[in-house]
Length: 242
Image (tube, rainbow, N blue to C red):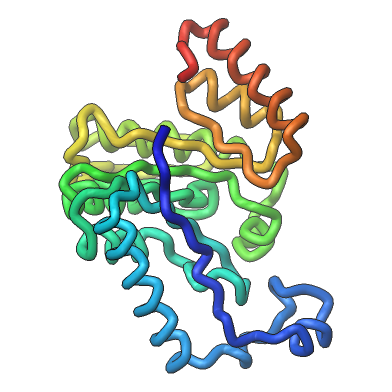
C-alpha cells in the first residue's frame, strides 16, 4: 500500500457567521470575502507542507481542483502540480483530477505531458467527469457530460501514444491538425486514475479501460458493492484488478 498527502487548500479566513448569511459555500458565496494577501500566505504554507511530505517519505502527493468554492483554492490543478514538481524530488504527483469534458483535450494532453517531463516521470493523471457545479459553470448540456468525457479521454491518450500530425473529427471536438510536440516521459503514457462519487456507469467504464476507480465520500456498503462491480467487469474484459 502507499500513503499520499492531500489537502483541499481551503481559504481559512471564512467564519461560520459568514457562511450562515448564504445558502451555500459554493457558487453563491461572494468572492468579495477573498483577500489575495491572506491567500498568498496560505499558498506558501501549503507549499511548505508539500516539501515536508516529500522529505519525510510520503509515497505521493494528491492534488485536486474545485471552482467557486472557498474551501478549495485550487481552480487550476495543473498549476499546483507544476509547483509540486519543482518543490519535490521523490513523491508521485497524483492529479485528481482534470475535468476533461469541459476543456480543450489537446491542451490537456500537452499540459500533462509537460508536467511529466518537469517531474521526471512522476505524474499520475486523474480524469474526472466533474460535479454539477463544473457543468453549470461551463454552460454545457449536462446530458452530454459522459460522452464528452469519453471522447476527450480517447483523444488525450492518442496524443500521448500516437505520432502526429493527425486529424480528429469527433462528435464534440474537431481539429484539422493535431500535432502536440511534447510527449510524456512515461511510456506508453502516465497512469490514469478515475475519481468519482459512486456512479455504477463510471465504475464499469473505468474497469473496461483498466483505470483504477476512486470512490469518494461513499458509505462502506456502497463502496463494497461498487468494488464488486469493478472486479466483475474487469474479469469480463480480461483485466486483473489490483
